[in-house]
Length: 211
Image: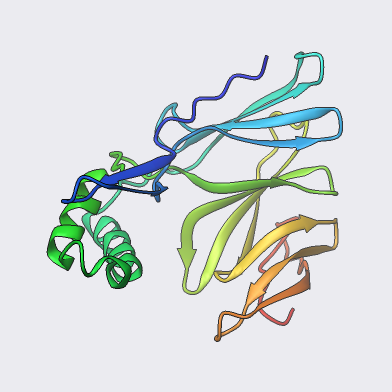
């Protein structure tokens, strides 16, 4: 059996007319799973703040690999919460104008938002052709999103850090390139590849737009 704890994944917002509005939780710490040939990798984040457990099991249910990756814990700030709520209000208010006022919608969205004390360390992860796990964190440096890369099966090697444009969503990676969807200023998606630029002391270095 593959057991997953998916609590705190979905948001259910009760509107004043007793109808419900559903969506995903922006600060979810629910388990995530990705499937590969003959195996699955589960990511758990409900342990110590900043810690992520990676567990790989095969089709028979045997554990092939288990590793905990630790990041510096980051407290969820009031500003982060307010920014998420305002984005949700801006997105949903036009369609709900006849049913709920913006202040009331803001209040209801705030109530239904999952607000843990610490920010979950990882937003999303993927399995790549290079035999690695790429972890997309919530950390941003200037306009670049911080990712960490762990080799599947490695139990103690240091994760490698990769910086990618905020609007770039990874779909796969090799030892030399990362591939994904990039959205331009008009929000038009483009399928692109970026060469991994290596720097002294890092297996991977910064990956910049146009690299």
